[in-house]
Length: 425
Ligand SMILES: *Cc1c(COP(=O)(O)O)cnc(C)c1O
Image 1 (tube, rainbow, N blue to C red):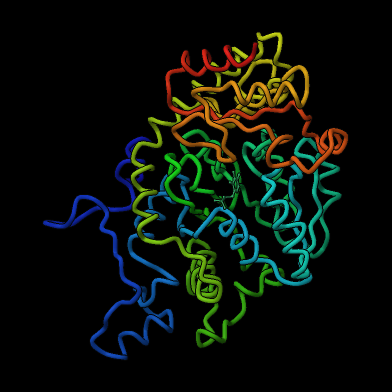
Image 2 (tube, protein in one colour):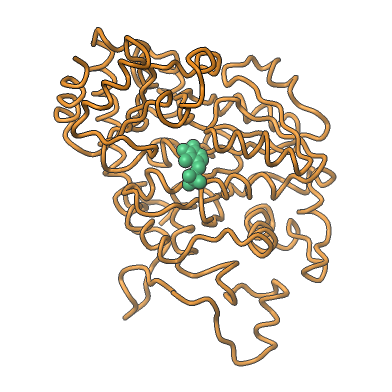
């Protein structure tokens, strides 16, 4: 599959049936797997052979789909998780422990911000948040001797900032640390962070990859490039014996290409069990089969709606990285020359009451907290997800009361525009 275009990989990578086998990925709806001898099963528990024994750790359906996502991102190994939250937690916790420190872009998904700044802090893992627009000096100053990972989002949800992946990768590598990039919004169809130096890529597959609002899920892909052994003191979990598997050393036994995902599966999935159900993995694969076709439409609809809004007198501060006047336009063109995603935000003139009236007039676009599926949806944080905050608090948080986020679906752009036009009276 390696030499095929990404469109072909979306359709066919990950699963190649043999003679007489099912054309579509089979759903292996089984918690356990049967063996003839204890010795054969024992080899799996010793990580001497690869295979399946319990779906809390691994399932063939999931692995077909994870292999497709790894192929799309250009990585060497991948795994599915039960959600995007689990993917980001596992990616970080696989190389961090109490006493470790993370450098993260401050412009990230709210759920991930809470995960790092509240829940992981309780585990003794500290973080320093930096502006995605910081200088190299400011970025380098955020590192500590205990820093073990750098984190950012290609296009941030919901701020729609673009990460300068090369700048963050350079700083990470200068400090002997991998860069983890959450690539949920552009998907590998529009950006492959590994090509720009990212070491590990994560996804909320709940968004465009599934694409139909059908199943919550996540994915982790390893580039296979980070040399754990060269930084052995920083990553003892990968470079010293794991006594729970008879003293194997992941980085030695599975190499740069396999160590990260094997450890993540055999330790974190074993102990925490946030696996995606095989049913959801099957649905996710249906979404992936058309990802390249859908992303082109999401991006062209996003741009058309952003251009329409930027000419509308009632809409201020339109954010869309591929809009020429957007502050992230140059970075968007560098990392995503073919387009971004379908999420656009703007500030309606008239603040909270105007936003509330606008939302209630929408006919085609639904009010949802979700983004990135086939149906256009809108959210006004001030009257929904952030309604406990005053206008002043919202302003301080960078979320004006009149902010509206639109996730452009796959409908005809003129119908979405007509809906916005009648609601923006
Ligand atoms: C939604 C989202 C997440 C969290 O994913 P879930 O599947 O909802 O757990 C993480 N990162 C980004 C960029 C997201 O948009």
